[in-house]
Image 1 (cartoon, rainbow, N blue to C red):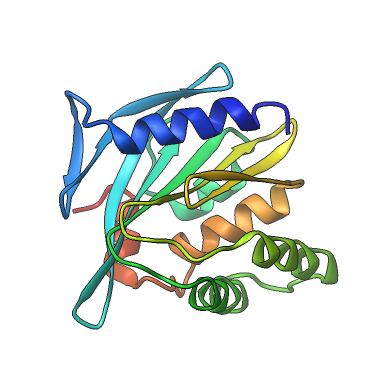
Image 2: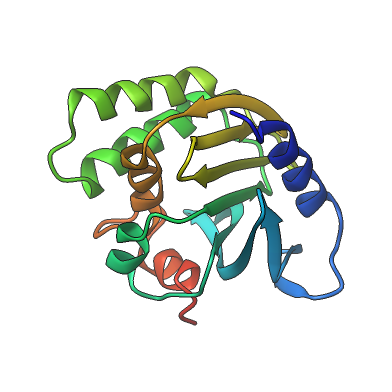
Length: 188
């Protein structure tokens, strides 16, 4: 993807520096806005993914304009960025299982092509350590750049993939839970 290096640099900067203004959860601060490929994206919401009693990651959703309507967000073909800053170690197998469960629970009529794209995503996953980041930056012109454990891993074309990965967070049965969904949509 053409801005993969720029996006990776942006995400590393975004997650390694403490910005002057931003939102904070579980000791992770995310800036209120970022510039990606010429587009200004604003922090729509920040959420903490918890599993049982453990904090797993702090997530941020960046959009061209704030919205708390999942259908409107998914319908709009505009740049967006999902950021996950891990606050504990998680292995690739667990991450991949969560992506596949989220896909099945939140996307109607999963096509073979979309399933193949999630297979590509699974091949990109590595174990993620406490303090490392994962990110997905969607550009309508080129698809989704994927960063795992702070490293660019490649791109996956198509809005179908971008929508499906976001639906795992904001779909009808979000893997991280309904409270997480409400936070990422900017609802307190």
